[in-house]
Length: 548
Image 1 (cartoon, rainbow, N blue to C red):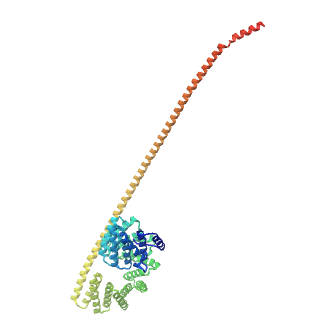
Image 2 (image 1 turned 90 degrees about the horizontal axis):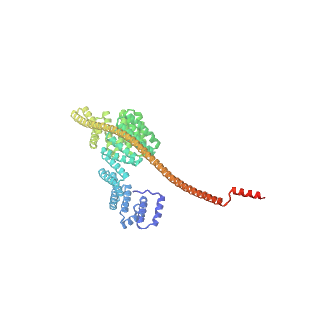
Image 3 (image 1 turned 30 degrees about the horizontal axis):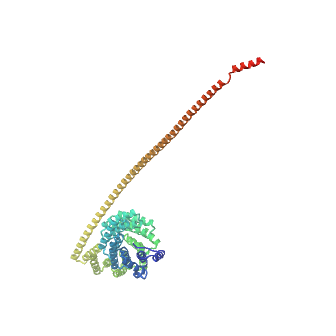
């Protein structure tokens, strides 16, 4: 719940504060406190104090939880682990009273991270799993994915990589759903480390390549180069030195362009070590000296000492014992200064080899005994084997066959147990490969089934759409036909009505016509009855003419 504010936002919040009263002031005050807590005023800044006092006055448990959350972040940044744990614990209690799950999750996760910083991985695992349960309860995919990722990392630190893989896989599935490419890159990078630890090298390479692809999309070139180098280390563990060197050379080129000197030094150191194995001593020395120069400039004593021991080993291989003693002596001094006991053990074994080769048997035996004692305490099998084998040889040369036999028996027993473990690891590796291939086959089969189902769904969907379209067309057609039928009926009714009106008018006209004709005939009869006939008129006219 950390708020990131810029200057403009702070000014806006300050203006908001001027218009707010009582509880309305708490949230902007605490938001301002998240930024100003990093100022010289620190925990004494006015925003934090006023926000806390108001939250306490009005019993705002949610805000009180956030107040302690801010304190936790402050102590975390200063690496004051116990204070941070105490603050997160108080924050969780207030969030619990307020029944605010997101705040509870954040405080538990913050507390777990403090246990990680203090190397208490078992406690960290317990609290991370508690945060997982709360995130599930809150149905918060983003928070759940993050908590699962942290459980995976803790299990990796506890050397339980098979368990770590389970949590990483669930986290990756959620980040895929959330389409969070940044988190997907980190999770795939981490799961690759666990795959490598259990011997599942194909899965380790595939996961690292996937992380590399995500980093490339985001243009995170340092992380991109790191993936190339990590793939190189996986190939090295697979005893594929050529492929490993190919990756390291590519990583070296990219890191040179980016200017990351510290990481570049590690890559050059690894290249030099592999070239020694290939007996390419001159080229190896060039790379080791380049790495040594980087670590001198970086003032990194530990890595500088490691380079010196590797250069010493190179001179031992070349039988240049004076140069070997010079480098191993300085390397041992620096390793003792930084308390790197693994490096000390390596240097002592190197001295034993140098003295054996130069004929200084007593010095050689003394160095190997010191190396054996330290390797036994540290459980460095390779260091123990080197010391035991050489002690058996040296005591035989001294004609001390009893001690020679004892050390050879110890060497043989340790070698046998080492081979048994190595064979078990190989069996586990083959099983992991088989399971990986089986899983890939199952995934391919599921993908094929999914594709078939998707095609069937598409066909069914198309058929449904066509059917629905056909039905819709028929319904529309039926509606049109029915509508036209209704219009036709209305039209016919109007025509019928008009026809009846016409018929009625025609009958009325006919009746009127008949009545008129009858009237005319009647009038004519009357007229005829009143007027003289033509014969009568003619007769009358003739009479008149005769008189004249």
